[in-house]
Image (cartoon, rainbow, N blue to C red; front, side, top):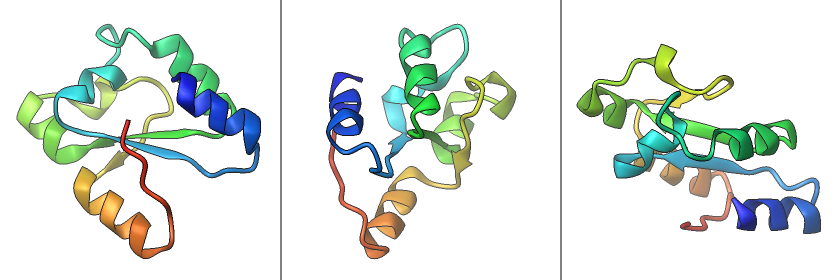
Length: 93
């Protein structure tokens, strides 16, 4: 979260999408996330946190269980590849 805030502070117009998949999914699950407040603050700055639907199926997590304002993508890795093809940069946290 610190690095995301640093990016937004240094480059306020940066478009940022955090694609969450695998073991990190709980970061976006209501009642399980230890970063819910930080995510809400970053969302207010325009940062998108997106959950992988493949991971959600495997973990038996429904969309209704995600933190408010969290969209889903069909597959996390596919979203990352698509964004790179569109010219986005990839940073792994």
